[in-house]
Image 1 (cartoon, one colour):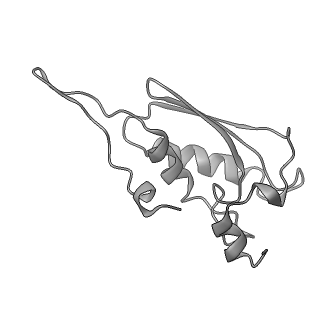
Image 2: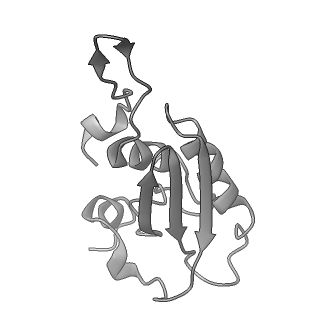
Image 3: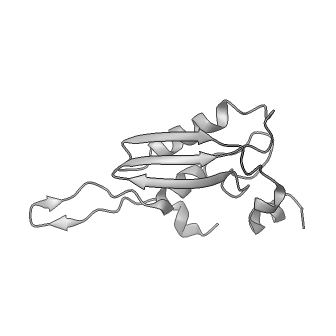
Amino acid sequence: MDDNLMKSEPVTTWTPDGETAPVVTEDAVIAAIATVYDPEIPVNIFELGLIYAIEIEQGRVKVEMTLTAPACPSAQELPEAVRLAVGTVPGVAEVDVETVWDPPWDPSRMSDEARLALNMY
């Protein structure tokens, strides 16, 4: 992952009336999600390809994610960890995390960094 994505500085705008509220960026949300790891796999869930969609609208963030398998032992913890991580991004007022199963996750969704870390080349 690009090191610049890991630095989630709030994006604000200066106006004659002063600084505006932070603008939530996709890069900042991704950086927050990248702090969440599956406890059984030493790669963050973004690099694993578990995040399917991120929608941002006026401080509200919706994340669609999946798990490596429906019977994943972390099925309760991972979506909550994502919700908490995204909630720390400046400007985020509300976070909705939805677990989806279609399309099913498979190893082809992993980034090159994840494949390298897991020796899956």
